[in-house]
Structures are given as structure tokens and as C-alpha cells.
Length: 156
Image 1: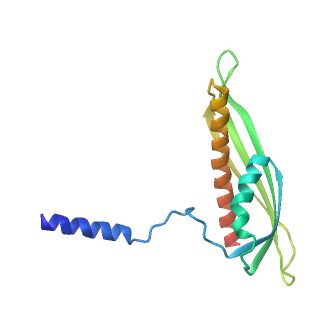
Image 2: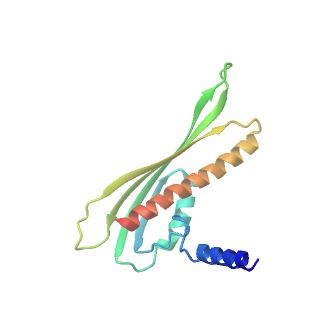
């Protein structure tokens, strides 16, 4: 009994102290600042992006970026049944990132990169539930995209 208890305590302490943390947990990588942010495209996606990037506005970092983000949201009919009614939708959120460093001694060349997320969902007969589910999916895909942007800017 004492051996089992000791083994259990050892396993608990070794798992707790192993240093594991999820990759996208907090994105505490604040080694850059967004000096100027311009958003174009889908308002729902842009509001999520703006809220996530607020903490990178005034952190007095050496790396300062001028960022332009264009977002696109598409809802495409993915599959149809024999009567021609849509049974599945494909939701696509695209993000185009244009950025350049805001330093006088650096070159002012603008760089561009695109990110995309998509998901196929089943059409719900209840339109209200369908719209709520689509909003949740759009929010999740937008957060995934902005996490990719934060990691990309933190590494450049």
C-alpha cells in the first residue's frame, strides 16, 4: 500500500512539473509591437482579430510593424442531395497579411503572406441553430488564423 501511494505521488509530481504547456495557450510572445493596424473585409472576423491584437499595440518592443490584414469569408455549397438541395456547406476564412517593419534604419519593403482555414459542416434544418453554429465556427477559425499571424510575426 505504501509503495502504491509513493508511486502515485511520484507520478503526479513528475507530470505536474514536466513543463508542458499548449502551443497556442496564451501567445505570451510579446517581442513585437503593432504600430499601425489596418483591417479590411469581413467585419465579424475583423472584430475578433482586432480584439486579439490589442495587447500588441503598446508594449514598447524593438520590433514594430505596420500591419494590413484583409479577411474574406465564403460559404460554399459543398454537397447536394438528389433533389438539388444543399446538404453540406464549406466555410472558408482567408486572411492576407501585409506587413513591414517600422524602423528608419531597416528596409521598408512590404512582405505578404496568406493563411486560410476551412471546414465542411452539415446543413441544419433550423436556420437559427445553423446561424449560431456558423458564428461559433467563424470565431474558432478566426482565432486559429490570428494565432498563426502572431506566431509568424513573433518569429520574423
